[in-house]
Length: 212
Image 1 (cartoon, rainbow, N blue to C red):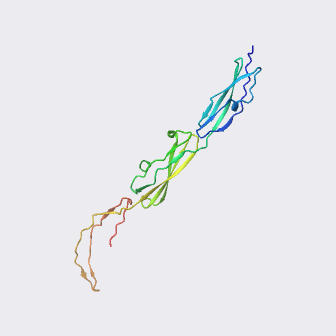
Image 2: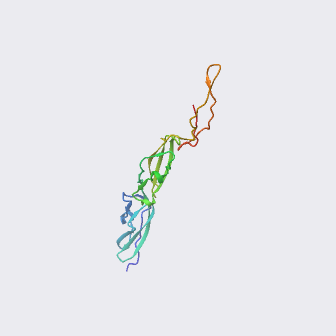
Image 3: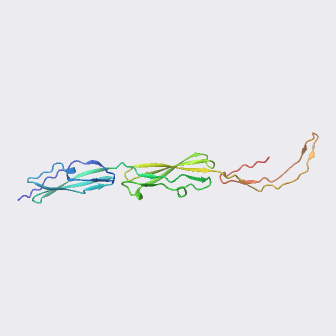
């Protein structure tokens, strides 16, 4: 009667690179480091047999002899995934200067990844304004997508901001006739008084009003 269990021997922990499907198949041969038995080993098995995603996973190697005795050992595996998400920027956008140019108007980037579900990909944006706010300028909006493994990809959206509308003048004085006088130098002059009109603009808060 053999009641002595085998001696399970695991290899030291190791890092592995995941395949394109975000998986790595684990075999007993990959984990076993020369397990022995006083009689004869019948089988070696591992659990789990496949790992995916980022992080550390403990693999249990079970060694069983022909008398049914068994022992186990554990090997740690660190998964390595370096494929960044695939990010798609919204199309370029053109707006008047007084229009909201937030992502709810101009669109939001989308992303997919070989390991991280789309709902778990973190998408952010940052803006760089090129030109003069309120006139002809554009915004470089850089979108970033980060998966759960820390891999990042970016794309750039161009948002053009144009001011094509002239100011609107209000309360313009009516036409008027005045009587002038001729001075000693022969020049006709007249005093004209009127209420200065006002003006508003879709882009410029303070509009300059002049007359000639």
